[in-house]
Image (cartoon, rainbow, N blue to C red; front, side, top):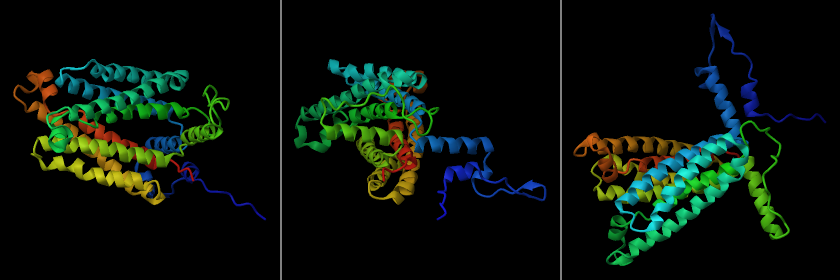
Length: 345
């Protein structure tokens, strides 16, 4: 019996036959042929790296950038609160540490395996603790949770700390990935594995399987759910932030309307491979664009305040939160990343 050879889409693209010439000009077919060869080649390599879980450096840098944005956002939000409690300084301190760990992890393999996951876990823990304090802050306002709508809108942003924790989640995932220059199907030395001597066998096995899935890019369902959760937090923040402004512009409704679409796409990824390849990337790209447009509107809002750029610090602190739309765009980025990954089945 003759053995059949399994086709590889990436190999087919890389080893495609030369483009035929028609009347002295290259015959271009398809979107890929309309782009420069360098761009299409890099796109194929990037896609292959993502599918095989080999983009640790890139995700480490993205973690650093996300941490900077979240840190700036929380810094002037807590400045508005006059740093009434000392714990409000913790995210301000942790965010630059995570940014440094992300950049350092992109340059150093050992740091990416040791320092980056530790700082990422502290960031996630700080986000959970901050969520508790924000819930308590709403409860301590006059009327507490008996007047939920008013106190949630006028009180501390409940889900903002969990958005801050997303940077830690990205850093933790980055620490489990292979690096871009690693071979496609080899294990890396130096990655500590759970020891069966003090952990239950089932827990050890599940931990190793999850690590392997992350390294091979086969955790699309997990990242799809993370996209949905991140979109929910960002959407709620946009809802009551824009509600305070009475939805003065129609464009302020767009993140509110786009949030459930991205949530459905992210959760639907758990059951549907088709949804992961169609609705999820479409909704995620729209979220990325919407976050960029929102960022421009927020910058314009700061410029239009009395004094404009002549009083940059005051107007940035007390104007519309500049980086909040980019946090919504980060949810879209998670969705795009999930749509490119392989599935566990």
